[in-house]
Image (tube, rainbow, N blue to C red):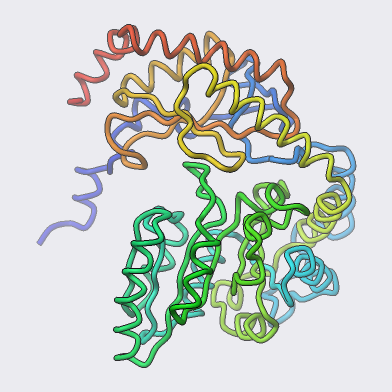
Length: 419
């Protein structure tokens, strides 16, 4: 027998082992100043490409006014208690109704957090006799939600209709034995690659198989579709999404989330979502703030238009310079490069210190070894000047990566970590 903590002390995990080199700079960095296209990092001005404020709402005066007035009126605590007990208000109901209408669903229910909420929605929708079939590249909140499932689950290859069909055949056979049903889970937009989920192809399989579809549209809500209702609207299949979930943490620049579906399903979830039944209600400052943000999504299409002007300029500029941005079909802009983790550290330090560009870095184990992913999130607040500076900086760092500059600079770190 051993002490439980021995393993934790000996093996800090694939990311944790880099803590001494990375913490405070590459991970857990501290951006300062008002949320915007340009902020400060360690005292330097940087163009920020890692803030999920797609529509640029976070620092708008009218948004801050509503947030401030709600905080002054209600404080940070009201309403106290869980929704079922003492934390329910007319404003919570109003926000739910407006969200349901916006995403073309019968009803909606508020969630305190997208991550926590999605796990709980999965847990509530399935029993031990049911089978889950989900895209292998689904977000961590979906993976963790599926882990709660007491029954069988299958993954299908990312955005692969043939793989999905094969797994639906397996799931159907098993469901016939257990007497259960099938839940298929995908995403509206996959947050790392930027690809939209194959919602149209998934929905088409309903003609052949009996299943229900649950979609996480955190990155599609507010950015895709004619009205901003998300990836389902963009692909013309919103009506066929049985349970739709999105967060306020991206386009709405806030905290919270919601789930939307037919009234009967939402009524069931209201009484069976453990993460909401036993958690404090979403505070009024976030509820009133979300109402204002949602109103701006509805009434100011120019915000989404400006966002996509910037997205197209950035993505087209990168492609014209020969960068690999994968197959993104959303605002998320991944740039793929080849290199080790130490090289990635040297590259990002150069990008931030010498070029004033701050973007997120993604390495193994999130992506395969030998790849570096620089993830850029364009917003409506970015300018053409920001984009031009960034394109020039990326050309410069690629040259240094290819000529071995970063390999030489990172040799000591690589040796110390056994890379």
